[in-house]
Image 1 (cartoon, rainbow over the protein chains, first blue to last red):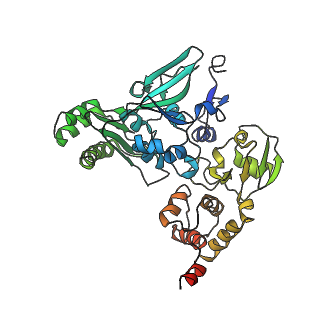
Image 2: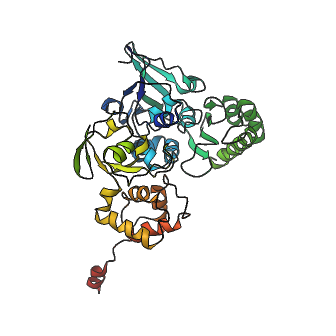
Length: 252
Length: 157
């Protein structure tokens, strides 16, 4: 259906769709309802890769023993999405497709080296999540493509997550960070640029044995936080540096 | 669209993308479910779909087709739901009352003996502008107190 009518917007849990509809900011008029597609649900591990179906809800992620064991930072992020009512409906694929720079799972997926699985009539392809976003609410997903799953390889190292918002629940983040400390360090940061940010130069300072101060200096050059209704660029820059230090301290 | 609301089968003639909240209030005349924000931030529109709390302002009617929907009117007819209503009155959990239906429905999955943290987590998606929340938690705790094991104690002696 998507191949024939590219202007169709795929919808699932609809937790952001109805916000747009309510405030008249939703340009799309026609929707493709994915909610009942069982093939897009399910969590499994194959060849040491964790595969999460695009329609997996936050509640299912939190309850999954597989995710708790292999990707606890995703469980931590899922717990801080909205409240139970949102977690029962919102999906991982929806969070990825929505492409908001404040998408709660995106820093985790970036730090986890996740891949987005896309399927169309032409076939299947996977895109590393750090190459998936091209601009504000824009991704490389072609109009005829559906996100079917998110794949996460085995993570070597300690996982860490923190979201900073106006309160502990029902808050869009001012800034958040997901990070892995292993032989390699990977850092994903949300709400500090038009897209989720992978901070490879900052991570390289840390994995190369550099000081926190040097890493924080590198971080300030890798992010571009702005002033908006939720926070200021200066606050975000300072808190990003604080989160970096906390990540390093807590994963010793 | 055919669905079950509060145990009764209903057929609603409406657009599949109509908000479940509006179908409940307008097509079914069940006005106990409130619209507080229209964007899934306040929880006043909470209903259960197959026992699971959701914000009905974010659910298309099509997703409720074939499902069992419970609103505050239905919850009030259950033992626990009715006990919660009475507790909210007795312990001051309700002042203006606009958040109360959503609060009660969000609390329904909780089991007796739920901790304060579990109650707060279950209600994290529900905002109240009046009470400051402790009275709400007290109301829920009052209903979810674990049963006293009088009989077992007697046996042990």
